[in-house]
Image (tube, rainbow, N blue to C red; front, side, top):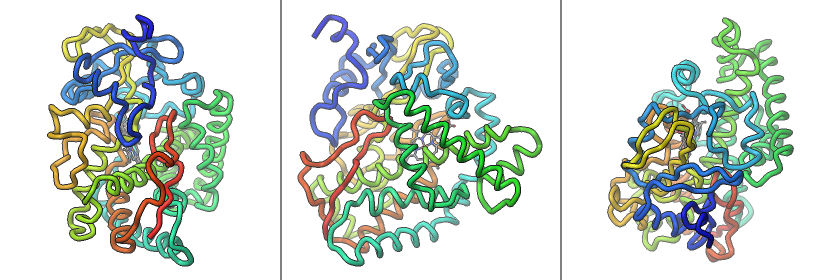
Length: 403
Ligand code: HEM
């Protein structure tokens, strides 16, 4: 290891150790160098922050910006840096007050009350998918048969996107999340997705339905608050954010419950534990391997370290969720612990807008599997499973199961 590498390890950190745990180096950094420089693909050296308390404070601090247009924003790959075009700059990558105004246009769509009203429909979708999965076989790829289609169907319904087109946008949305993909491929995928959604928004303008895109067109585009491209950009963000996140969290969650002795059986015996189990899965299994990206707007301190204006900051929520100062015995998955202080959905003004939906999907998926397939087993040893390394979202390509 050269001096630079030991001072500022290459980031994302190499995936070593158990695929169900963050890389061991992350734990060492959290203990010894909780705010430290790392080296990105372009040679830039942003700060990596790993302690729960530091990240919580930083995510509240308005001196840290989410604005990708700001000099020093820590892009995680060439593809990400080049692909940040018009289509991707929505409120996720903006700061208040611009962020506040745009986020507010969607908050009504995701309020807990509205999401709870969707619970019965989500339960019915879970049942229909499990009917199909179990009709003729006693084994399946849980990702393909269940974990991916569930959130996909739900977000399509909410947005008013025809589910028949899911193969088209699933392929492209996976490409957009892949930090190892060639920049031009990511750009092409983004362009095609944006074009698809612009066309769909046009159709909704002509013939509105009871869905998010129709309401964005009627309530924001028509009075001139958003352009059609901005409507498509917001829809694109929701489509991407609503897909791979929940799907991979379901896959990793089922696997983690099966790996930790006794946890699956405990849930089968007492399904009332499902909501707590979902929080513990969110804490224990981070699908955001790279951390939340920010750039300092002015000089500031994080955990006693001075960060200069224009320097990038990566807030590693996966490491925070395994911080022994925040959770006892953090590496053990324990569905009976109180995990509510986890930061799987982030914290502060950008905290996940879709979290009420994600929670219901995760609870419904898990409850359905426990009810219908209490004897479910993962059909391959951990070493033979196909984990998604190298993307913005961690998870599994496939999860072979039998029952
Ligand atoms: C298990 C599932 C999910 C996880 C772990 C997750 C995680 C996160 C995290 C960590 C953030 C904060 C990003 C930041 O601060 O930079 C975020 C933001 C966001 N998420 Fe999720 N998410 C999930 C599911 C969803 C779903 C289902 C939707 C919508 C359909 C969604 C929509 C969003 C949006 C729109 C934002 C941006 C909020 C803002 O910037 O104000 N997410 N999510």
